[in-house]
Image (cartoon, rainbow, N blue to C red; front, side, top):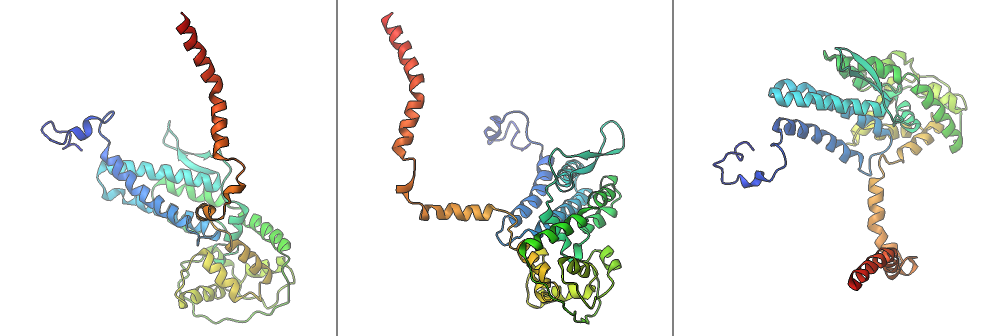
Length: 343
């Protein structure tokens, strides 16, 4: 752009009509890097195959990717890095407010941070929390992977978010439990006394399971009560190898491992142990994360199913309505013209 702005450049006419100064290219480069990440996740969320259990997983991955992008500022030129740091932190605050209702933000007047509350209700509904709660690797509902990434940061902006996230999600498991119980009662699932089978799977690195869950896991329970409450109690104390068996089933069949496929695999494998929770899982996994794909499908099919003869408003009726609407204004204009002619 600076080269084009040269007085001797024959293509200078391309920018002479621009309003104001030339765009800041350092800002443009930083904005492009951040926009590419958000665009990727928006395209993923709008796919019809993406279900509600993946919403929290996608948002957590988005925040981690933005954080990792911010770490790359050290490898960029000073101006681009400065803009990228500001953009990444601004977007992080926006997403945190959307998820948890508050975030730690730097104060303008002094070198300190304060908790800022959003103007809108947090977007994480009971459905999203229940989807996390029924996932053994995320049943604490506390975004442990995000907290783990932020905990390793030397930047107080990120490290101070960790205790806030944990505090804001403290009651989420209880909320999710109540929602699962109420939903199960509405779905009227069958109940049986089931004996669990002992699974023997070699231990490996549990990088995809919340460490707090592993510490509280007490192994398999031999019997289950005939109630949704009993299933939940049993689920929260299952042996980790049961969850790993469901993941290995997906990998064995070359299927994508995500929050939705993991739920489906686990509750399909242990449906007899958790009949009511399996019904709830089916309900949650059937809900699309975005309505955009459905809206596009309806828009494309409407031309095929709509009967023009049943339309209540004809084109001629619309034209007449518009004429009548403008008649008063036209009448006043006509009177002014005639009055001027008479003079």
